[in-house]
Length: 187
Image 1 (tube, rainbow, N blue to C red):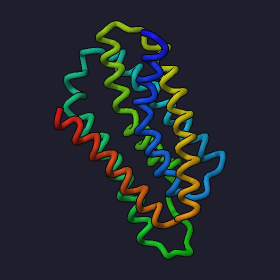
Image 2: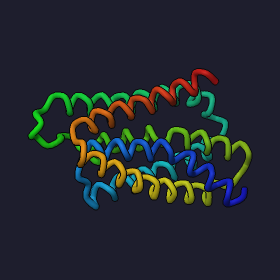
Image 3: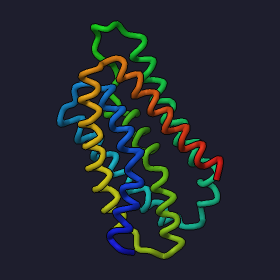
């Protein structure tokens, strides 16, 4: 498989992480190096691990995962999105946002939700008997870089527009989940 094709796959897989990074950093507002590292590292790591897991599982578990992967991604993204909207609406204007999507359970849930598609890529690579290690590394690095870019964009929007951006960020997360759900249900 050529490097150009691997980069194309990586960029395609990273688009959900990009959109989630914009939303998450808009929710956070003023991001720090720690926020950037945590989200970029975890999104990249999960995006690199999922194809490896899918590749190792091969066709044995595909029939069990494929019917529900879109529901898992939707549920995780909708949960985080609703939590962000609720948090923005339930606090006063002067208060800082509570809940940091770049920490704890939220971080893991977002990392899994944005990398479910990479699991399917790994499954297909396994069935095609393509060595996964090099593509997984490229996918992880590109996702990390694209996540960092998304965070910079979201932070600028979040610091300028505050609470409305938190609400929009939550809506975007839910919309990404709905998009994943619709794509899989209409295939």
